[in-house]
Every structure is written in structure tokens, then in C-alpha cells.
Image 1 (cartoon, rainbow over the protein chains, first blue to last red):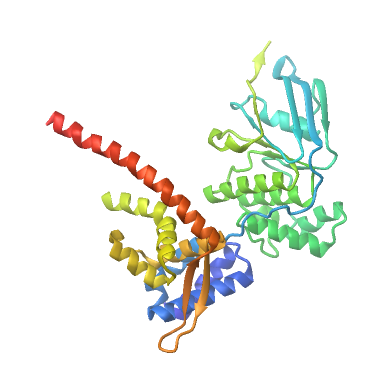
Image 2 (image 1 turned 120 degrees about the horizontal axis):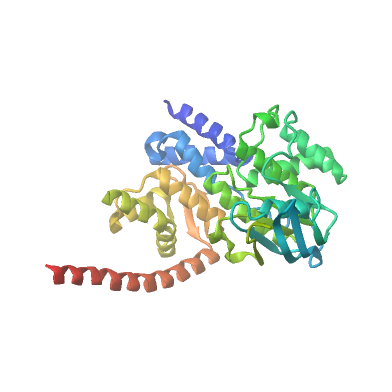
Length: 274
Length: 117
């Protein structure tokens, strides 16, 4: 591989890794100049182009968007009062109380079958509680574990569609969507429809759409599943960025070591047969 | 095995090392690699060194500038920002405390071996 081929391949992989094209250009020129200054072949100085591009892309990833879109702070965005859910005779949730303000993160934990996803569905309004009161903000972003994306639309089409709901212009919706995607280490490619994306990338699309509609309350269901480790960390950074921007965020998770920074911890006890 | 452990540790400490060396004086990439080698860390591959420098730059701890030279090629020089200097000081303090604790624990391993011998 010649030096030029190395640099071409380095630049191409940077772009694939979701690095902004201007930034990729700058990084590529930098590595070229460094190799010249060192009087060494780039492969000798930096190692294989692919591995180096991945390492550089990781280091260059933009800090999560702070205050991406303005929101009001402080009001209650979700209040659950003595919420109970029974499926036939099986009681899944009993007496759940939670008050989540704008600018707070609540984590929901519990064993499999403890009713985490059920609770999220009730918060989103796709499932009705058996008893109790659910009050919440009107504008919600909901990123369920699966579904939620249209298989035959591209990422940009999703951005335009979801942006339009809140009267965002097509160009702004696509630009904002691309920026949010880059924060998760994903660069949507033109012409690729959602069904062609990997599970992890579909989930990233879900997360971007959740933010794009500028919700006061964001509901996430185990969004790290299918994410690689780095994206997972990015996602938590993103959760806190949403919180700092004034959204209330409810995250269903079962990784306990991440929860030292959350404002509310709701531990579900699990199902009971009666 | 030992090499892998060493490499893992160095990975965790490289950012810290760079902050310290840049605290002494500004430098360019190869100069830093050389100073790390002289300090006893062995050869640090560019594929590890440069992403680390880029990360520090993105965090605002380090500022990088291309500097032209009349005798050689232009080089990218790195120096600490005020924020980087504060971070270096803070980490040095944490490290000194950590090192003492580690030494105390490591010293016990020596004693235990003498007793069983």
C-alpha cells in the first residue's frame, strides 16, 4: 500500500465511522503532515489505516450536544400515583409512585418480567393502567426496544417526517438528525432504508427520532441493547445531555453500576400470581 | 502476559503521562514519544499516541498548533491550556495518594512470601 492509498483508506474509514467530512479532511491532512515530518510511511508511524481511523474517530467524536433544543425547566413531566397493572389474575405492577421533573433522569430497574417494559408502555400511553393515575407532558419521545421505525424509509426521510410533526423545515430536520446521529457515532448513508440497518443502528435511529421531536419527556427501553460498548457510553452521555437541556428522561435498564448519577431509582419487585 | 498487563496499564495512564510531559514544556508528537521512551515506558506506537493527543485536544486540555520551521518540516506542537494545567495538577495529587496506597499493598505481598518460605 502506498502512502496515498493509506491516507485514502484512512479518510474513507473516518467517514464511515461518522466523522464530519470537514473534520475528516482536516484529520487526514494532519496525519499526512505528521508522516512527512517524521519521514516515515504512514503505516509505519500509525499502524494499519483501518485500526488507526477507528481510534481517531473515537477520540474525535463530538461531545454530546449540550442544550440541543431549548425546553422549559422545572415542571413535572411525569407523575405516577399508585399505578397498578394486572394481566388477568397476574399482577405485574403494584402501587407504583414516581414524580419526574423536567431536567431529571429516572432509572427503572428490576428482574426480567418485573414489569419494566409494561411500565414504560403505560407512561407512553400505549397501555392502560388497571388502576391509579398517570399524568404526563403531551410531547413525549418514545424509543421502544424494537419497532418505531418504518422499514422502507431512509434515515433522512425519518428525520423529515418526525421534524415535520413539530413544524421543523426539511433541511433543518435532516441537519439536526445528522448531528444527533454523529453524537452516537453513526453517519446515515443516503439511500439506505431502515430495514437494511443493523439492530443497533436502528436503535440509534430511534434515539435520534426521540430527540428530534423535541419532547418534554423521553422514554427509553433498554436502548443499549445491540450498541457496542462505546456507543453505550455515548448514549448515557446523551441521556445526561437531554436532562441538562431540560427534558425529563425515564430509562429502563438493568445495569446497576451506571445509576449513581440518576435522580430517581425505581426498582420494580416483579410479578405475583394471585 | 506481563507485556499485556504493562500495555493495559500504560493505556490507562497515557493521557496522564502526556499532560505531565506537556506541563514541563510544549512538544510535538515524536518528541513526546521519545521522552516517554527515555522515561522507561518503552516505545509508544503512533497509533496509540496520536489518538490520545487528539482526545486531550477535544477535551480542551491541550492546544495544538502547526509550526513552520526554516530548517525542517512543519510540525504540530502541543501545549497545555489553563484547564489542562489544572487537570494535570489534580491528577498528580490523586496519583501520589494512589501510589502510596498501592505501595503499601504491594509491600505486604513481599512479607507474605518471606513468611511462607
